[in-house]
Length: 109
Image 1 (cartoon, one colour):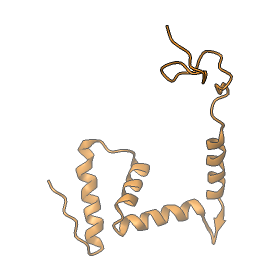
Image 2 (tube, helix red, strand yellow; image 1 turned 90 degrees about the vertical axis):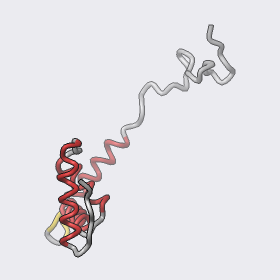
Image 3 (cartoon, helix red, strand yellow; image 1 turned 135 degrees about the vertical axis):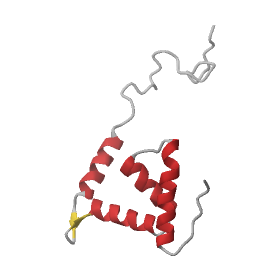
Image 4 (tube, helix red, strand yellow; image 1 turned 45 degrees about the horizontal axis):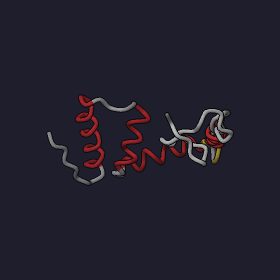
């Protein structure tokens, strides 16, 4: 038998059936409206270029300058997550970017 505490919750931290505090409508749809607002703002043209295009160009520039987080975003968003067989190939591309910028990255075989 499950005991009910004064808070209206069961012993294991679960709500009791028909507790009025349960949110039956679910989480508000803020995330969808925020995503839509970001998409609309990304389509705005500034100096002949959309904000989305400017952000993508900036991300590429950061990746080319050796920012590994930016490089990871470029790869994962542009080509999807890698499977293990592709990791070495993609690391070689990162190494080429570093070497092209006068930096030296070593990728172990």
